[in-house]
Amino acid sequence: MARSRTPLRRSLVAAAALPLLIGALASCGYGSEKADKDDKAPVAKGEKLSADSVRVGYFPNLTHATALVGEQEGILQKELGGTQIKSTTFNAGPSEIEALNAGSIDIGFIGPSPAVNGFTKSKGKNLRIVAGSASGGVKLVVNPDKIKTLDDLKGKKIATPQLGNTQDVAFLNWISTRGWKTDPQSGKGDVSVVRTDNKIAPDAYKSGSIDGAWAPEPTASRLVAQGAKVLLDESTLWPDKKFVITHVIVSQKFLKDHPDVVEAFVRGTVKTNAWINADPNRAKASANARLKALTGKELPKEIIDGAWPSITFLDDPLASTLKTQADYAVEAGLLKEPDLAGIYDLTSLNKVLKTEGKPGATDAGLGVK
Image 1: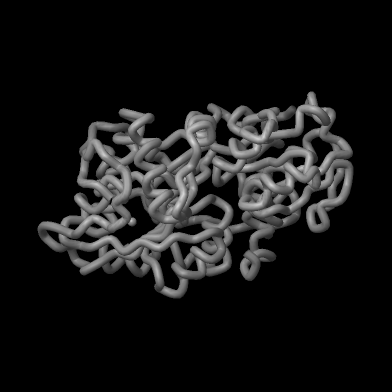
Image 2: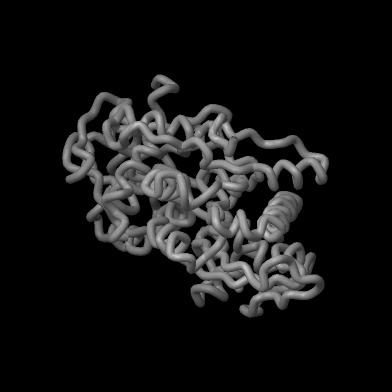
């Protein structure tokens, strides 16, 4: 398939469709060996920065493991010193953007589509992307009794999390690259796209109402545990096998008023990603402990072990993939030509990376001038 017509178009066609969805849709000490039942946020210690606290939003998902581990291990709080982290979890990007716009949170971990949608709807006035967090973690998993090759998807029912979300758009774009036709609104066509919440996708698969799913982790691995097979890893469709799935945003007001807090937080994400990559098994246990504290359940070993290797935790926000996604959304007719100038402010990130002796990140020409 042509490189120019792959996930990129998909993932941000999502950003375009998201306007349709706005209404629809905290730990052990730093470096601790343990990450089990402590569900209390680390206590702020040391010198307070320019804000008494910073309100942080993220999802209880593995693709948000920088937040999970950073909070569980106290790494983020250590960098913030006496400025207390107050965290809130969300189930969907639109609601997190609404919270940012309302001033209920200051910083968030979020996917590309809601970030772009939020930025464009506010005419570039509500947020900045200040750091990366994760790439990958999305797979096409199918019933092997019904689907053995990619061509077998024609005529089948494949789930995506919700109309216009990043995975939904990615799948719609992939369908189009094969020359098949599916109506993006109804999901009807050569392949039936069935919008199914990640929480109920396993039951839908078990009942036979779907034949597979284009899904993020750990939903994909939950289906595999039920007998589904991975037919395609979305990362294989991208240059260098990397695409932004989670990055860090901050409200422009908070960034202006408290740049020291933002820099400290970004330093915390960089140190968290290094901690995760230094010992993946320990990191998995830490993320799972935070998930249990947040949701009351930890992921079974076979699920987290299957999901974790497909996610890359990194500091680079992979700005070029966001830009390409936007270009393809326009091509699909789901987004008017967006002005994304200023969506990135990587000043703090590059300062931290330089201090850590790491290469800097680029903003693909979409940074603050």
